[in-house]
Image (tube, rainbow over all chains, first blue to last red; front, side, top):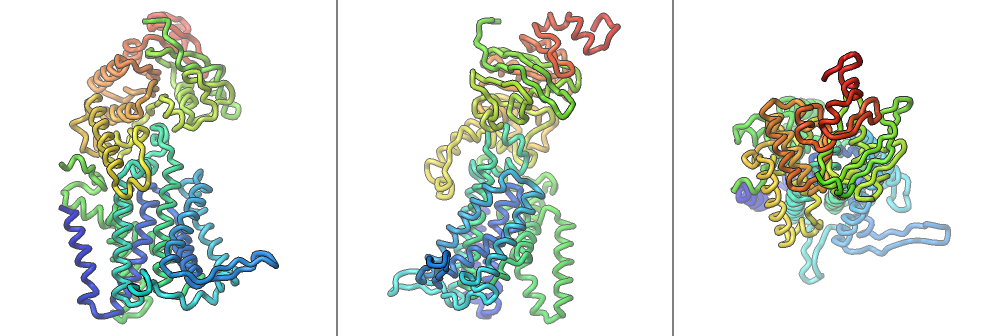
Length: 342
Length: 261
């Protein structure tokens, strides 16, 4: 039942470019969509394994830079006589490279910080993002530093004759929607599987999980890797959409935006980041359209956020769920087992 | 009771020191296949420390634990669990936010095999494996008598039922030996009776059990052999009858001067 409703929603969202002619609004939806994908990836870590990564934007930025560099080509002097370079490649290959690079980085970070939990994991993740940002600023030969990578080609798919270009906003919007749906389905299947149960076990009670023979480290690394890959993909989309990437992409505020989306929407629920992303991705733009002073805009944004967190501490989605199932908010089970609904 | 059964767990001169504090010193005992051995002693005697060391949650300062003649030194808890040596916890230990059924499915982790691609593509192999685990989960819930509660949130169960679920979780790992840490502590009379029945039923299925428990009635009823700890060392070992009449045990529990327990 809810599955049909979900597909209906996707159909409605897919129809948006047909009737929404204002490209500015479409632009808002595209950027919100890209951040929703990033927020969904963060939710896999924060909501399901319970580990807060405050450096998540690093994966996003790595994806953006990788895809940009692969599609622009680069040449770097590793040693005085040795140069490593690459001719420009198609943008879609850049996106694949971005996913792979982010996944490998996620794997490495997961492996390196697997002993750390809670506050220590948070600090390592912040430090990691800062290191990546410093590399982006200072390795000018590769990244152009603060001068930014410009003229990133638009995304195209397919052979020359049947090429599909995502240069125009409606097409790019549909691409982001498709990527979002794919990521949603992948996360849904993952968290409802054996691996997902192991991740949730780590969140709920790590000592018990280990006593049951679950290699929690392995699933934490897996979650970090999948999460990083998705964030990297979102970053790559961002690079080919905005078509300019500079070190500001690693700003802490982007991580905070993702965390806000996850927390307000409902961490550990599949729909949470989507709802939170819709609200907190679109609200700033709506406020801007209302032509009130920027200070007032941010105050409204902040108050709204505080209200959501104060009155719906578990997030919007769990609150709505428990309202409809008539159960108390503190006993709501995020995902009821499929078998028992038959 | 067959005295000839092979030794499957042997605790060999383990010691645990925290700085100057000696939690355990030179503790040695064996558990033979199919036995229920009780590990008792006053609070702070080192019972839980012994459990933590056996199951790899804590490193002994010296000594060695062997399970089926394999040394467990340096192994991680999840590796030891996979050898078939599975424990429960003193305080309620279930995945509170999940349903009872999901809890047991989580416990069945080691019975499943899954690859990332199978999961993402929902391949036939993945579905078959999940169905198998679901059937096994129903069987386990039936065995411990919680099948009526399958759909409920674990945290919403009564205290006694949460403890039973804790045992169900341990059983889901398919252990060959079960270590129960105070399974009936804090339970009321009828809950205790139910838990004792369950432990006897598990034992009847051939499981070897090491039991830490303060409820003497339960210990005397179910155990074939008892090891008594006090201040980190073993002060007595024997059948329930021998232990009940051991003057040193009586002194440890009641202090000097008293003649009868």
